[in-house]
Image 1 (tube, rainbow over the protein chains, first blue to last red):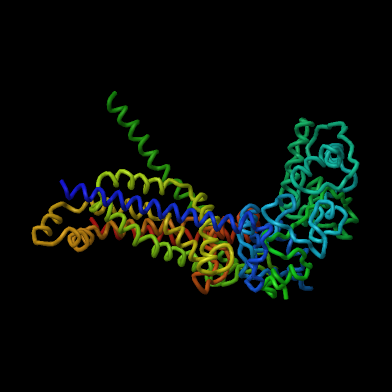
Image 2: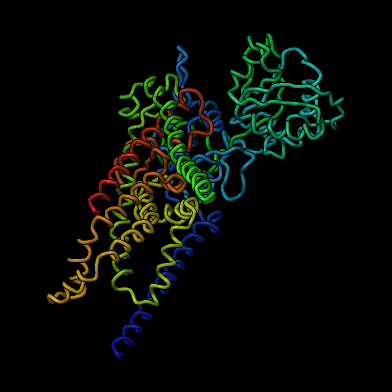
Length: 307
Length: 285
């Protein structure tokens, strides 16, 4: 009996020791976390510029990655049509914007990139060539890492095509675009006042434009219930080809149309998408040149000394 | 009438049994029909032995050797972390644990099994990855080490539960006989009971391997996902499963088929593990 009770006491003691140690561990952890997190924006003194940069990229095939490597020159195009993505193989790869942001927020030496629409104050966006990443600068063209979202039609198109485009360019349509986090291109858009014709059209093309187009189609279908709109997601070039050959009425493209394509199609810019290059709030670097971004991502610069 | 009912129920049971077989068969057919032509197009040696994964390049390269190695390293790491802890926990639960602690410990272990893997992953991303980076080293959003530790924790419930029941299944006469020969409780547990429960414990470990190699959502957040052959435990790593999940969303054409072919390789690996499991089981019978 006595033996049993001492065992009991021992067990309780052991359990409490465990609990206490777990608590203190928790405390010290959360203490560390807050010191690097909340006070981070003010405290850049602990930042060691000789430490290695943590380069974070998106997965192959992501529209954001495609645009980023093209705009920063990481994509090397050979004259024979060959393409090479020069992003360093040691870059950490994450497959969604949220994971990129929380990784950058939690690592003061990290660099990443996200769509401008997703940016919030847990991370900071670097100026690129001295220009801040804002919707305004994307709109006036001074912010370099941005791309247009275009649609293109053959001639004027049928009634439904015309009406849907007038919806996209109306205030209602542009509101949908801004709500999705993209930059609207039309300043004095008027409210939609179309004729709502019935019919069926096919929209095909870029997977980057497709998410916002899906929202536009959804919103438009609520107004014009007689419309049947099919959305096919491939890439910009196939969408443009399909529009030229007539298999789709509207092409979506996340790049500008080439001259020979413009001969048969009429392009229309519907929105702009900026890509913000982000770092930790405790990173003292404010400005990066396009060249430095490229060098960070191809691995020729590995520290925040940036040389 | 009774016979009639009997016949109907026979058919019902037969159909129920067929459903799972049909599911396996369909998945097999889908995987191989889509994956094998891609492997042939890429070249089986370029695919399995190639060390560069660059599907967006022109010409594209589809080498999954880094991912095969990644899956093996991470699984091995998980075993290093999970097996000793799991096994000792199982021994404690079965042979040393007082009843009132058991009442807390056992549900806690079962709860561990019930936590969704993405929650493990997020915990790893927010707590484990910064902790390892600040205290041990490494760079990036994860490494073999972080993935191994996290997977080691995730396979604990499997190993503990299976091993515990294997230990409990050892006949009491073994224990009593050993005590009767003068061995202590501890000596009996480690020298008599554990060896007798060996094959059950092995089965638990093999099931743990299956869980670790197939895990995706947690690994994707803590492994860094670089498609490179890792050179240290602090280097980032991409596994077969994460490769599929990360890129499937946008992939098209040969890239998509190559991802399905990655699934074929994973499927074959899992089949091998299952074969191993049945060998282990047969030996125990």
